[in-house]
Length: 251
Image 1 (cartoon, rainbow, N blue to C red):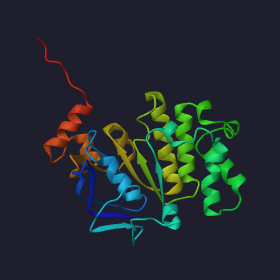
Image 2: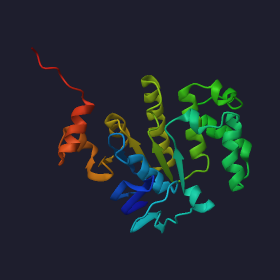
Image 3: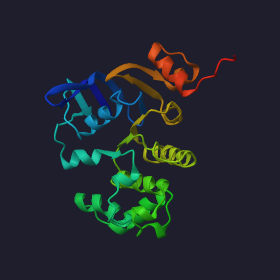
């Protein structure tokens, strides 16, 4: 469904080039949930934004559903792929109700039956009818992220891109959102890429995981390899050890 070959992203800081992503290659099969993990600044979110066409990039190959992805995506291209951002409060318009937020993609794409589709989308993410005409500040963090997920899925895209979708939420709410994403993935047969710094999150949802360090893809491992620690690179072992915490040596 997604194939990336030799992806590169370069930013400029006062004329100085910053190579944020260097030579990243991987493929994601249809209906697979693929994880990308790494420490802050490793380039994982930049890869996701490049695939979505939100930032400029270069690659020898970037195909979506078998078609080359243009640098400037068409309206039809946008329907294939939707994005869920890290901070649900920042990604929702503060002066738009839930109803306004969910209507907008349907209006832009000229899709009929808007009222019914909005009501269905609200129900599908576990919100209640009374949430429909509330503003973001009237919702909890978990409810706001449910709205963001509903907005991403309301056009029935085959691909969902998730950038740290639970990191801004309380731990108790994170589990609810992860379970929701797992259910929706099965219901919609979604192909997904999930970016996270949390190995536990990607192990819960993903079948394969790409490890990134300093803009490069270090290795791709299966979730069973992650759980058993059967990995090939020292950096991956360090990430696993860090996620498990440490034990202070007795004095």
